Amino acid sequence: MDNINILIVTGMSGAGKTCVVDALEDLGYYCVDNVPPALVQNFAELSTQSRGEFSKIAIVVDVRSREMFPDFKGCLDELKVQGYKFKMLFLDCSDSVLIRRYKETRRAHPLVSGEISSIEGAIKEERGILAFAKSAADYVVDTSEVSSPQLKSLIAQLFESDGGHTMAVSCVSFGFKHGLPPDADLLFDVRCLPNPFYIPDLRDKTGLDDEVREYVLSSVHAKGLLPKLFDLIDYLIPLYVQEGKSHLVIVVGCTGGKHRSVVFAELIAAHLREQSIRAEAHHRHRTLAN
Image (tube, rainbow, N blue to C red; front, side, top):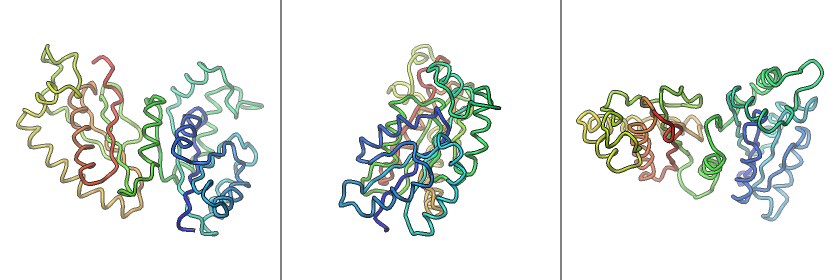
């Protein structure tokens, strides 16, 4: 069963599972939504019996299964006992963003009923139910500050088979003034470098502009910092791979997330791609005002 490609998708309601399913279908996955845990093994068996059309299958399991969901942990254990090779993707999102999304769409949270009368209470209950799944997941993606196109791009990066490196790396720039990314594995702070914000001609540009990049890299401290970051990352990635980690999130922060962090996130991603590692840069706060 080593050649089976089974992906189990779970996570918080409202965190973007529909968008992820669309992206996976574009990658050739046969996607099945809202599957009761008891039926997961049936779909896994289907992938072993097919002649190619179901060779890649994504199974969405979440709390919409309601009273059947507690069987999910036992289902995962049974898949392992039966020798199925699978990965699990967990979609997370901050409570405030989930509440805003539910209010915008006017949809009811699946756990709002009976004793749970509010969205806030349903989210709290759901987090408790899903805690084991998040801790067991191979990939945890926080969608709080990720647009639908960005999420689709990230899914393509993680699951598009290209025969390359087994590790996928997201290099994320952010601004400390907007808060720390909750999904960071490695965090680097480049606020110690000269800030282009104080140069009038550069203030309204971003780290994707050549003028800003040249300014940031002209600093003697940037020239010294960059190779040291590369050396540390090059040392750590094989250790993460050995540990079995499939997705690494490297975040780089500056004050506003618009200039210095963008430059360094792009450079780190380019450095990793030179080593045939799947790496993309994502910029959470590049378009926000400083």
